Image 1 (tube, rainbow, N blue to C red):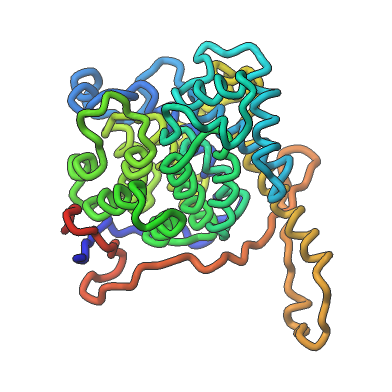
Image 2 (image 1 turned 60 degrees about the vertical axis):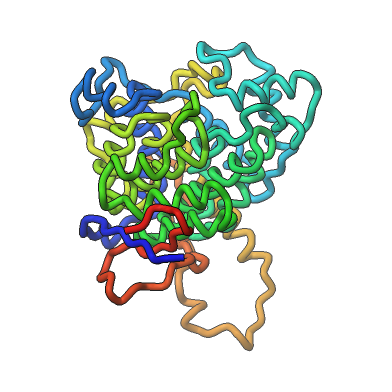
Length: 406
């Protein structure tokens, strides 16, 4: 084993970013990354340059989200309905009612893993058997995992648990690991963790010896070297498809680390590396949006993001990612308030100062409704031991023997 370091550009996240701004940033960032990356999907960097030069903004006349945004809406709205009580049976029932039970959109259920799941459900299989198809390791769960991090802000382990529950219907193994890593990373970012701790949270949510963890470590360890190095560390050559979860998650975290959480830098790095660019840019956008907040998303990128078109999931037509962000915060606050109300009070351990401290902040939304925004008390975010010689802001990870080093 040998240490591997990466030096992100120095920058400091905004000191005071509200939970609502982070939640909206995460899901708006996902939708923006999806729309920016869609034209570059399945292309190599050389193909991107030949068509557009370096992509620095939208290259399509009518930018819109794809299956990544619509499945994130689907999973997120289900989570907002059931919260921490979510079960594989509830997820399966929603797949049957809202996807399998309705006319398919133009994209016919989207990727291979989703199509395989729908075929299995149609044959009468139930979760987890419904995930036993030829593509259970795809990035289909990772692309829809950000809402779990928004809901479980500051609780990476809980975010990962919920993502795995959602994924049990459609994914296995590395496909589950990819979703867990993304959900945990977003949860850490929602609590104000710096990018290096966001990466560590993602790694801590998956087995250390998994393909996902090893690919993620390799990509982040060389992130300071730029896009070519990240691609070399993560891309699986010789395989005809680009939807591998270990690859896509590594490219996304690598782009996020290379930009040190900067939104524009993270998303454009992911887009210009190609491969499954709508998914990698959506994940990088969710991580960076949660880190920096909605204000970090350039206005010219956020303006075209409207309600979902329903091209993949007709049931999601008209739903908006900002609506989902607010719904997830409201559900999280409701569950937090309920847990506090049900907790037994032991006067001998309660201090007067604690009793006086406000637990909930009410934040006004557009219109007359109010959403209760819970002040997050994050669970400890796993951190790698600091290297005194590395200096501030450097990624200090452990590279497996044979993996990319400094």
